[in-house]
Image (cartoon, rainbow, N blue to C red; front, side, top):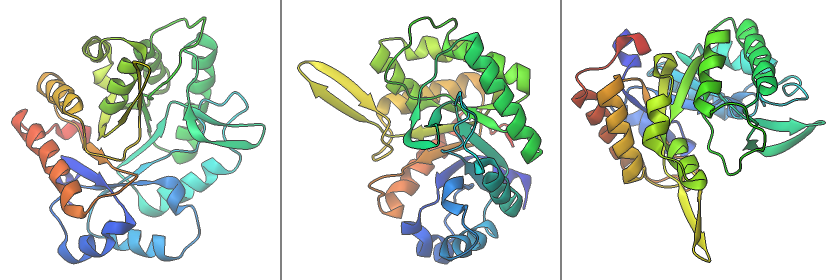
Length: 284
């Protein structure tokens, strides 16, 4: 595959679109899958993914490694992740700055951690371990958050910057997560993005979110069940114009629409990337 196939906008790979992708071979740059969906030994998921992998570059995105867990990462999970990565040789591998396991219990959520030196040291050890086992650099994604901890010692952007410097990992900038967290915690998303360590970014995510309201208060939830919001598109355009292009994914994980709807989002992202003056080959 040509290196330029790795650039531009991609989409999350969903079973609902399986037949169309294999038959029509749509003009998208790449596909991303959740690692946990392919940790079994075989069966239809692998049959489908192997056929797609022959046509498109793949990125593997983890959601269950629990890289911020004080009790250590989920036993056996890293070995299963390595098996997926070795099998499909994705051009990017990423995980969340979050935790989801405790005392052997899986929480089925991406939970926040405090931005302290102790937490940073913990995550640094885990990222080092993951990169050593996989034999490659990974990207860590900024989270969407719904609470803050007392006693935090640094901003999220400083936490991520220091993590990248200490481990050599890259960062996955999820702009929807920035919008969700900014609204929930009443901070300026533009200021957050100004302070983000863009020099370490290797991928960008765009997605939709839900706004809940009660008694005059609102809460934004990172649901990935609808189109990208105008605010996210605006921030994405600004980031690309000022910082350059990176492989960009449209995430749509619930209430998955017809392929044409998802493809229109991919094309909009691709148009913004092209308007920025070309795609950054270093990102691949």
